[in-house]
Every structure is written in structure tokens, then in C-alpha cells.
Length: 217
Image (tube, rainbow, N blue to C red; front, side, top):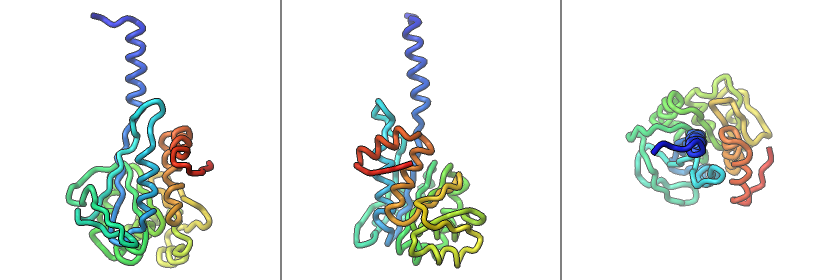
């Protein structure tokens, strides 16, 4: 039976909304001695964000590590990654957290640094939290760009990577396809900014209210 005019109009509206409700696949890198809130903060913000008046989530958030072995984060928290590098999973957005493991261990891990560099050719947006910026810097992804990191490590970032324009006193720095953020809890601010950038303030504010988190734009 052919649709009525009203049914056709409603169907068209439904299809437009469905197309507008884009899904981004987000990967969060894990490694031993990763700072917990660096990855758990963005995971929480992005995984609970929801399109208004629906149960559709815009972000499919997964973790990835060099192998699928259990990762031992800072202070002993154990996490099993969803994917390993060998899975060759495609992400739209990649989050590189920091912590002791980033600045003192993985920065010397050629496999991790090379993987990050290669991902820049595949993702739409690359982000870092805290000293995850050092991994982006080591991969050469921040050359000629502005960036930030944890205040305790910002002098080191400026000293060791002279091609970076280091920004102090900011929660995050947006360079278009690359976003860096300050230390630990600043990753939450960066995640809300990412929602605003991709989806608008309404969804960001709704997500923040659900988390009882104070944000300002």
C-alpha cells in the first residue's frame, strides 16, 4: 500500500535524523603505568553521551593496547584491552593518555610510537591527555603546532621538543585534527570540548548534568 503524504513526510524526517545521528568509533590507548583518570575520565564522558530524545550513543568507545595482555595502570588497577595493535581496528578518534608509563616507558617504545604515527593517517581526530602529548611529540605529530601537557612536565616538553609551541595555563589546545589537554582531570574538559566540537553544546551540557560535572564554554 502506498504511503500517505503524512507518512512519507514522517519517514523523510526519520531518515534525516538517522543520518544526522552519526556514530564515531573512539579508541583509547592503554599501556602499563597509564594514569587512571587520563583514560577513565574521557571513557566516562564519551561513553554516556547520548543523542537527545533517543537512546542512540554517538560514540562507541573501546580500549586498545600493543597486546591484549592485562594492563596494569597506575596504583595497580588492572584493565583488559578490547583490541590489540594486531587487530588493525579502524578508529575515527584516538585518545592517547599519559602518566609515568607514557613519559618514561612508552616514549622509548618504537612499536607504540610508530603505531601512533600511523594512526594519524587514519583517524579524523587525534587527542592526548596529560603526558600523552610526549608520545604525539615523539611521533613528530606536534611539530609546528601548539600543544599543552601537565604543568609539571610542560618545561620538559618545551625543552625536548623545540618545534612545538607550548601553551601554559590552558585545559586544552585545539589544532583541528589534533587536540592536546593538560594533566589528568583536564582530559575530562577536553572530552566535553570534543562533544561540543562534534555535536554541539546541548549534548555536552546534558552529559555534564548527568555526571554532575561543572563545565563552562
